[in-house]
Amino acid sequence: MRFHSPTTQFRRTATLDTDIGGVPVRKGDKIYMSYAAANRDPEVFDNPHVFDTTRENARKHLAFGTGPHECLGARLARLELAALLREILEQIPDIRISGEVKRLRSIWFDAIVQLPGTYTDSDATQQLSG
Image 1 (cartoon, helix red, strand yellow):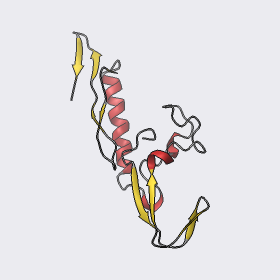
Image 2 (tube, one colour):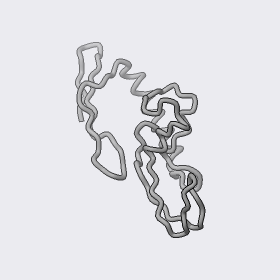
Image 3 (cartoon, rainbow, N blue to C red):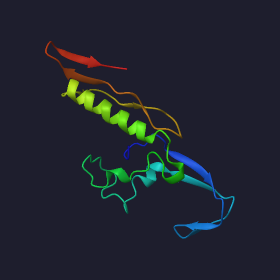
């Protein structure tokens, strides 16, 4: 979720005068938020451009937003993703990517639309597509 957040950017409107990182922001100003940049912040994540599933602070990502703007479905999404990955690894332990990963072309969302894979079952090597 940190490496490729489903939402890539968002915009908010400041409701009061403040500053963000020393930059003055006035009430009514539009603020652009980049989840990709936040989730690769070197002040938060060591080696931020490295995919590492063993990070101690892996849950600090902002893929689902934060605070009052956290996605209402975040808990369900986490449960579903964990169940999906657990089931795939139990049923197809040797699954591997076998071709080009195609991503959704969007300025707002990041998603995989095609991820070809292969695995070996007891009968033969199977091709996954779609």
